[in-house]
Amino acid sequence: NIFIYEHRAHVYIKLERYAEALSDFRQVQQIEEKAFIWISMGDTYRALKYYKDAIKCYNTSIHIEPTVDAYKQRALIKKELDFHEDALKDFEHALTIDGQHASIYKERADLYWELREGIKAMADYEQAARLDPQYFDAYVQKKIIEMFVGASPKQDIETLRKALYGDI
Image (cartoon, rainbow, N blue to C red; front, top):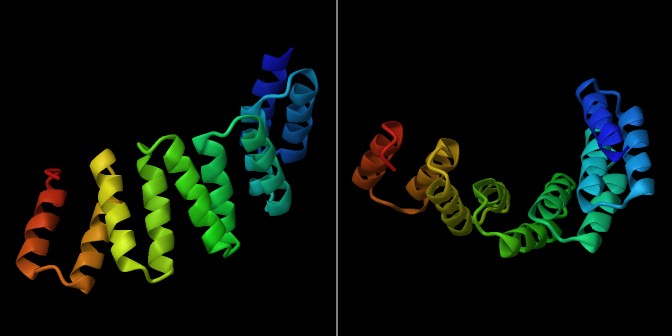
């Protein structure tokens, strides 16, 4: 039964028994190939730091059904491996599918910040906060960047005050 294998694989992941999780995911794939199972397999390989295998899983998932999650997860690995341009492309693909994911804007903003592209980072931090007001850290990071790129101190203090009291 697909459900039993899939459920048990996720339990194995919680127990950090990754080899057994991968075995159960493979059983599911033999019964019926599903894009989301390839994502779960990629996540498992990522936990093991087998990045090439993880990327292959995300690639397969994207081939079957391009999803926000597959692109995001692949982008995060590429970011970690310093394949910055490829990571940016994957973040863009994810946002093209669905531009309402604050976490993707936040991750892309962090990458822009690493690349010293403060203006782009600032725009993405703002969008993350706009989509999810609970993204306080993204909003504060955006305000810190503004301080460095030239916003007025009075404006910064007022904006940070609003953020502190949840009025963003």
